[in-house]
Length: 375
Image 1 (cartoon, rainbow, N blue to C red):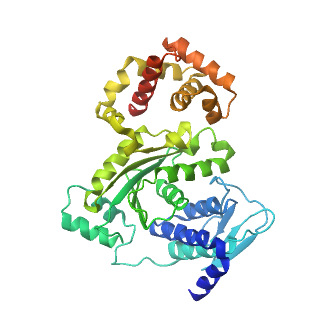
Image 2 (cartoon, rainbow, N blue to C red):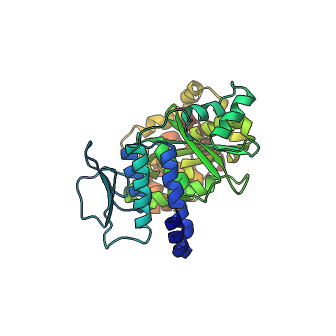
């Protein structure tokens, strides 16, 4: 530890980044990441390919976008741990924090892949404890104890964030990677419940919503992946309200409701939805999904989306309704504004709307929200 502290003091301006690196891998350990999730997360953090080799398993290698990759270039830095080996492949040689990244990644690998699990003491990211905190059926005493066992202070407000990945990846690992890119949090605990990652946050800055930080973090991830620019990468996030620790189930319900409004198709702005920002729109979620699905405008949008260019037309409509500007919608979709105008014309012809009319624009936006909630 003394050597680590000396290294941090020498980093000077990079000290905060170093602390985030440490917190990033601590969170992966708390979440009990798999070998594949650890390598993918390390590659994403380092923004270069990462590989892992163990005597008892296949060689794992992921590129900077988190995609599996075959054998690649020479290692720019490597470290051994308990019979295994981790390495980074950075063109042009190692970056300033690569040594620290490899050291913390190897420590995480030693804990997750080599060390024998301890018996008795509950883990800081024990899913059972997180589920207990988020349950309204348990007693206040049991939820207070669970909060303390998770390292959270019952007297401080908490906020719950729901994260899912439409690509089928580990939503817990994706949640850890996303939260680690934002501003430092006082405490964060992650567990996957029903395929959705529940992130319990206690922030140093009190009641400020993490939504904007999460959008920025997701935007930076999308920018690093040219293939993800048009899709937002598949990650969707719902942010619950700031509540008393014993009322965490309320924030969890709000986060899951906000997640229903989120869409990975429109970029980070649409992918991260804050329940507090929905206002009366949240009332739409009270309508049964079957009624929403059978609404004529929703059915018409679905039918048009199934045509050859329909999905692209609907994406253009969503961008236009969100930004209120043809040129801003084009910028969001990385298209020329004439292409967006042509797609909007297709929608107008198919549904009989006139998007220059504020009433039809409102109708279109309402239909888009209803269609999203109907899924």
